Every structure is written in C-alpha cells, then in structure tokens.
Length: 339
Image 1 (cartoon, rainbow, N blue to C red):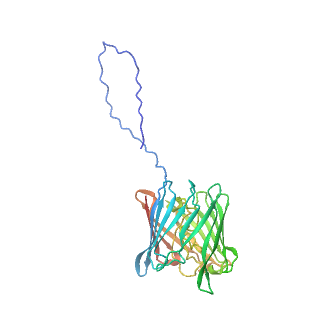
Image 2 (tube, one colour):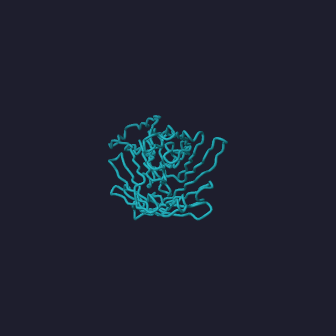
Image 3 (cartoon, rainbow, N blue to C red):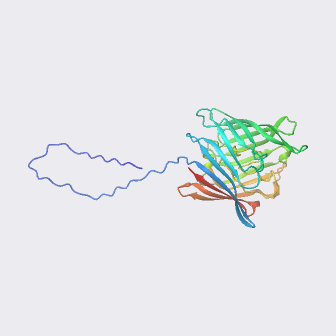
C-alpha cells in the first residue's frame, strides 16, 4: 500500500479586515499513485501431491503426498509422507532437529523406502549433518541397508557423504559405504554439479561404482532450459541437494528419479523432485552412460515440464506435468498447495 503525503504550505500574514473574502477555487484533480512492484517474499509449500497418469489404457491414480510443517522461524520440522500404491510404506513421517536458532538441521530421522513395506512396520534411519561457517553442508553420516546376495536379506551398514565446493558454481558430493557385505568403506558414488550463481543447474554427473548399481555406469543431466516459475522446494531450509533428504534409499536418485538409464535400461518413470534448482526447468536431459562413455539405449531421456501458474501468485506453480522420452505418453503430475 502506498502512502501519499501532501504538505500544504501557507503564508502566515495578518488578514486585511477591509478585504472581501474570496472563496477558494475548486479544481477536480486526478492523482495517479503508482504501486511499487511486490517484494518477492517466500511463499511456503504446505503440501505436494503426486499423481501417475498412464496413457495406455488411460488412467490416473494418486501416487504420493508430501505434507510440510514449520516452526516460527520457517524451518521445516517434519514432513508427512503418504504412499497410495502397493509399494513401500503406507504412511510415515520425517522429523528434523535444530540446535538453537541454527537455520539448518543437525539431525534428520527419515523413513526408509527400501526395507519398509505396506504390510509391516516402518523402519527409520537417523542422519547427522555438519556445516561450515557459511551454513553449507560439508558432511553427513548415517546408515543404509545393504543387500546381501548370499542370505537374500539386508544388513545395516554405515553411509557417509562429503560435500566440496569450488567457488560459487561447482560442487561435488562423495558417497562412502560398504562395497560388499564385509566392508570396508569405499567410495561408491560421486555427484558433480555445475550451476549458475542463482542456483540454476547447468549439468550434473552421478558416477556409480558398486555392483548393485551397474558398476562404472554414470548418469548425466544436461540441456537445462528454465522457466520463470519459482521452485518452492528450493526455498526450503533443507534445499541445496540433488537428492531428497526427507527419506532414505536415495542412493540411485538424481533429481527425484531412480529409474534413469544408469540404473535400469527399462523405460523411465518421469519422477521429478528437485530441492536444488531455484526455478523450475521446462526442459532437460537425463541420460545413462556405460563405463566406456557409450550412451545407454542410444539417447538420453528428454524431460519436458508443463507448468500451470498459481492464481494467487503467478510466479509460483500450482501444478506441473512431467514427461520423458521413454515414458511414452505417461506423465507424473505434481500439485502444489501453499500456506
């Protein structure tokens, strides 16, 4: 709201008693007040709904819901996760813990997608985080389930990640875990990121080294074309990674997708859960490569994102529809709700 201050300045002189008063002249004046542009304050996401829209036969079903809860400092304190399909757990919660007024969590307790099921208990993992003086994540440590082929069962093994920053536009993440059931810890994944100063991704490379994830294969994200729509997940205090910190079992994940060609040569599922990019891309590629540098299936998957603006604030999305080349006409649809 603009405030217009009108100052009336008059001369203070003694009136002439003999003068005949003259009534003031009335003028019709239209005053045009120009509103300043709205300040881009952060709008916080309340819920994100994910639907799977299948093309043949045509059908749509709810896949997953994420509900976000905050404290008075707008820090995420918990995330409710509900799965609708007959996979993974039914309903679980991620909890985040803070030390004093720190803007970043020192600990997250997350549901484990791999070992939890909809017919049994939900299993949780605890991850501890460490930051530098700029509140950049530099290390985290926790546990992950490791599948033992000989016993056909999972064991809990250590997981450590180390984050390195090269200036303001490059970073790497090294993942250390068990390369086999007996250990010791070894590097099994490395993420390399290139991005603009405003946190628009230019290129990602995720190198996988364990036999579980097709050893030596790597995934590349490239060709990012950005819309002007804000990515609300990037505005959270837990943003800044290309994997999702709100659940475990993300060893294969790149921007929310665990079905890329570096992991599986099957048709992709166009998942897109992005806690990094400041704006939502309208287009990008995600491809898999062999250790020799040959692209899997002859081409990368082209992701296209169709965006519907939120009527109350048109710089934010109310819905996005995500497709990819080998997903054929199937799409993942995400609906955003805000506080």
